[in-house]
Amino acid sequence: MNPTMPSSSAIPDASSQPSGATAAPLSVNALSERLVARLVGDAARLGVALTRTDDGTVLADAGIDAPGSVAAGVLIARICMGGLGHVAVRTNFDAHPLWPSMIDVRTSSPVLACLGSQYAGWSLSATKEQTGGKKFFSLGSGPARALAVKEPLFAELGYKDAHERGVLVLEVDRLPPQVVIDKVLRDCGLAPDRLTLVMTPTHSVAGTVQVVARVVEVALHKTHVLGVPLDEVVEAGGSAPLPPPAPDGIQAMGRTNDAILYGGRVHLTVKHDAAAQQLAAELPASNSRDYGRPFADIFTSFNYDFYQIDPALFAPAEVWVSSLESGATYHGGALNSALLHEQWDGQP
Image (cartoon, rainbow, N blue to C red; front, side):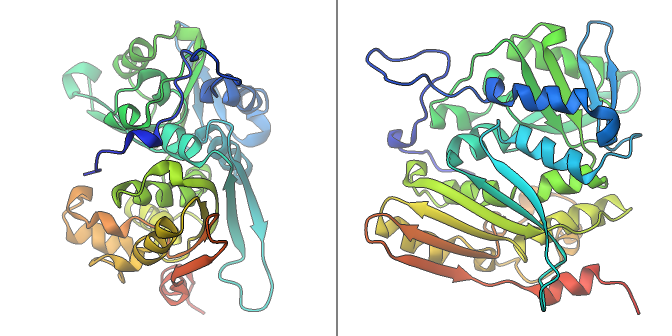
């Protein structure tokens, strides 16, 4: 689904350093380690429940049986970005706000933070026979992806991390079975007590925060899909409304997607004018044939199959793209606040 990236978009390999290099490559697992320590150390305050496997792997429940919190979601979003992103919740009660609570995201390492770490691209599954009960499926996001490098995306990025500890975030409503934990350990090359797995169900408060905090990542992925060289993007920031989670899983997923597709705003800084103009014109979600309906309705209409949905839909609602070459800023797309309020507002 994604085009092959030009070699100019490569990120230095953190497992080795070329001769003559003046700076060590960034390790998303090393940079996120202090954030993981904070999540574990402040678990009770953040509403996170901790358990350990017999071998010592930490399982952090941020919304399955534990309540979680907005603060936990913000910290998990920062972990997902490999310690390379600023994430914050902003309250806005100005006249006619899009929504009272907004998520703000910024990074000066957009490709590595968003695609090399935050992107939910590692498919992890187990059969009923392997689990001894229900089959299991989750997409893993966060720094440990860069240790395992199981996705073709990492070959395109030219990046592989090397660190003795790792953390992976799973958007699931139950703890992973041991067979999946063993696979993660094996693929990442980690000792069991050096891995932390964080669980954030979509219908949880923390899960809602960490998904909406992907507003910039969604823009970077769409940039990738459009074939624009990723090394064009040098700075990125964005915001999106933070809705309360819905009790129904499909509706909860719909809210987080709608927040970005119809309420997400992103500002990218790129090197060249041609890339800025192309992204402003082609990046917004309104370019998709499926744009204009609540995401839960779209997902249901395609029999719950993500791959039937037009890939162009997965993008922010509105973008500004600034060119370092010309100094000009180009704008595209628009918010659809009416759709959001129709879905989220209660009846009087």
